[in-house]
Amino acid sequence: MSVCARFVLILVFSLGFLGAGGCSSKKTIEATSAEAVIAGVNKGDQVVITTRNDSVEKFKVTKITNKALYGNSARVVYEDMQKVVVTKKADDDEDDEEGGFFSWLF
Image (cartoon, rainbow, N blue to C red; front, side, top):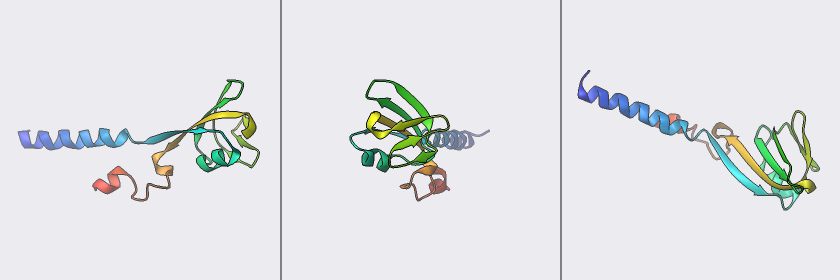
């Protein structure tokens, strides 16, 4: 294999690893109000909720109401929340209208 072909192969793999690193995003919401939490969470997001009594709940959001966030076996009301860490996948982001890194590249 020629030096040029090796360089191209290494470049392609390097770009692939860079693109793989951006597969999800994480943000922290201070749960000062129900509106703040509702605005920052979408159905399907993974959440880690720290409550006011310092317990931690981790789940995938299946339902959002004006009273609480729900997972398969979890329900946490907004007034009990202190902090919410939201992890969402990049293909779920509304800001990502270009189709991701690889769509832009090719």
